[in-house]
Image (tube, rainbow, N blue to C red; front, side):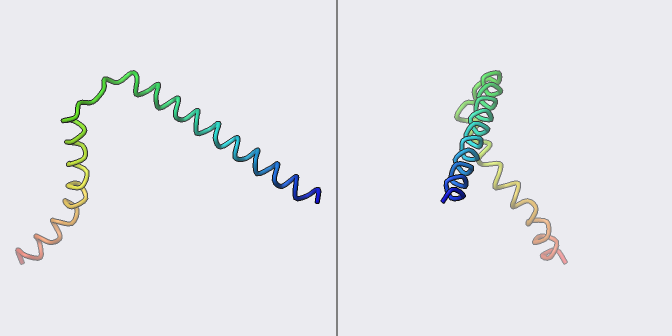
Length: 69
């Protein structure tokens, strides 16, 4: 029985350490974001619209080169 409780304690300790790392990473991210000016809704929308286009551009040259030949 002793090994089971030791294992459970170890799992709890690991979970606690992970939570601490996550919190520290979030604090660091907030700190960095605080130094940058907040983005406007238009900038955020432009970012969202540009991401899928970047993926499709990789596919388009292959498709267009097949159509040209």
